[in-house]
Image 1 (tube, rainbow, N blue to C red):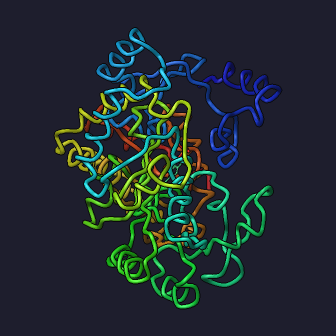
Image 2 (cartoon, rainbow, N blue to C red):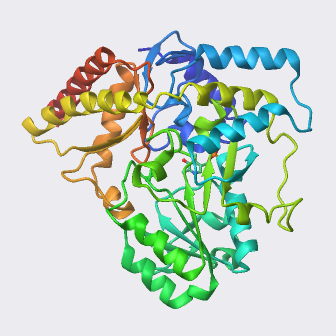
Length: 431
Ligand SMILES: *Cc1c(COP(=O)(O)O)cnc(C)c1O
């Protein structure tokens, strides 16, 4: 497979765009080689600048749950753009999408539209702090909530300690207000509340972690978070930017039947355009300006074209059966690979929910970030490169989830699984 044009474009882009890309994971740093530049997408396929066609397991990191260039979405965008691109004033369509989102995610009583997942989580944090008049945030190691200063924090020394900045440019004074705890560690949560209960504004969590591979919460983990937040009058924030409308129509909160106080949404909710949403309990949301004192605003928030795309997507999720189908098809794909790995003594584990899955080169599914780091990352890199050479586009990092769409039918996935077996066989022979 030739990727000459992509390679050239990347070299040129590096002179003009920081790192050659507009978001770091795209640069392929963690898998090696040069990123692929795409020019077109249809159904479950991506087409690059060298004329190659790939089966896509990234789906723009989630939004493409109905496949690429979904007809109803592209038509809605065209129709709206002929009427007007942006008014900077309210529209009827914002009311419509708000009602639609609420009908799918009933814990949301009121919401606000923003322009990215980062903006949604950032706004949740400010709202939680402003509402509780407390400053400390609890987050979990390996959960990604966008590049919000308070949330780009890694663990200090020891468990459940105050955090240290995960990036230069974040004041230590700020990161000290974030406590980081290993995912699924209920005792560490208790310990943190024992020490700091009066100061904890919020607990923010990916109710299924999708940014360190795909990790499910232990039974009772989320339930415990719900209880401890209620008891201590802290705000429970579910970051469902990735899982919302993806693992189930109502997100992970529907799967586990737990209502957070606030929810952050993104990715799918914009139908592929830049949209974030945050919302939750009325009493909390009423604290936002202009009704309340906590400020949050956006020039292009609720942009008509973005709203039209999001609405067109969400309307097509009416029939919840698509989630069973997505899950079934993902399992077909992964089970074929697992069977092969078992026969050939390659450690392999996987987990699926709706249209999202993760796999690890490890005997057992990891439960937290440390365990993910102990999976065979080198093998993942080889697998990624092998699959790419066979025109299958996986997320370019062992720390990401995979996404399929309703366009990935069983036949295509069985074929892809057979390719995966071939790739793993080649890797085995090399060793
Ligand atoms: C993608 C993601 C974000 C950030 O969303 P952006 O639109 O990239 O800013 C936040 N939280 C989670 C869980 C995500 O997966």
